[in-house]
Image (cartoon, rainbow, N blue to C red; front, side, top):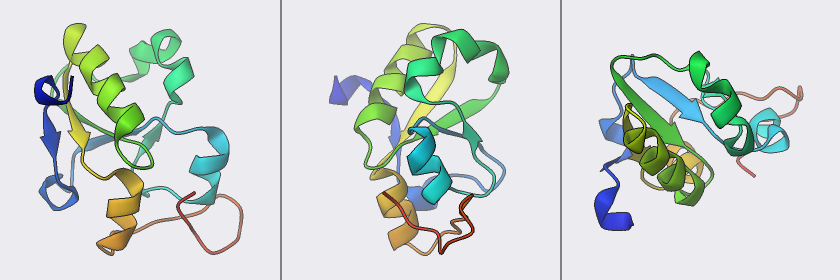
Length: 109
């Protein structure tokens, strides 16, 4: 599977990209990219209509495992999806913006 999943490093994600965060609600609440769309992996099939039909979708999770599976699924169903290598851990480590829904300091959990 890893060889068949397109991937990009955090610094290669365009600023205006559609960024899809597939982590669980508590992970999202603790810290996420400010412009990301949140659809937990388990809700993806029911919410596919929320994704743009054209253009690339960059998929992110905590470290890259769940997002790789979602990327593979999306590409197999007509989307142009790219996995974000290293996930939100790499995103935060590179100093990209992270916001929280809890009122606390943002963190990647």
